[in-house]
Amino acid sequence: MLGERRARGGGDTTAGDRVGCGGCWVDDLSVNGSRTMESEYIRKHHRHEPRENQCSSYLVKHIKAPVHLVWSLVRRFDQPQRYKPFISGCVVRGDLEIGSVREVNVKSGLPATTSTERLELLDDDAHVLGIKIVGGDHRLQNYSSIITVHPESIDGRPGTLVIESFVVDVPEGNTKDETCFFVEALIKCNLKSLADVSERLSMQDQT
Image (cartoon, rainbow, N blue to C red):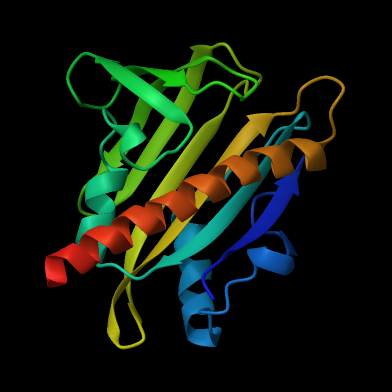
């Protein structure tokens, strides 16, 4: 069964210090060896330092598709709608480089309509993408995320380990847990869609 695992932190706690697993968040593909690698990747790329009014978390996804294919979708700062189901369109200002800004249109039904996002990090060698939300009509203030993709073997075939982490302000009237669970739900949908699209493209490449 494919799934995600998540760990939350808040205040003076960094992501990964307080682990919670349960239900569909647990990834049955993870074994001791792969979890050791996950921990190393998280320590290297996903160490956020949330302030007292912020929360932070990460999610893990295993995808049955080669890393180059998954990264080709993730790295497209100008086309997040290729796998993110809640995005209807995207316009980028400037060249695709660090500091570029995109205007994202959000599909109806969510408590948002637009999001202005800046490209903070794009490393094609290490497969790391970092984004910060700098404006828009939503409640995700001071939101930053990092997504990394790593090669692994799944059932003897090339697969990909995806880790996405974030830090965000906790809106007034909400708790850290409520905020984390809301953002985690969005990321979970994005990662599931990323897996679906990647695995479908991988199957097409094999035929």
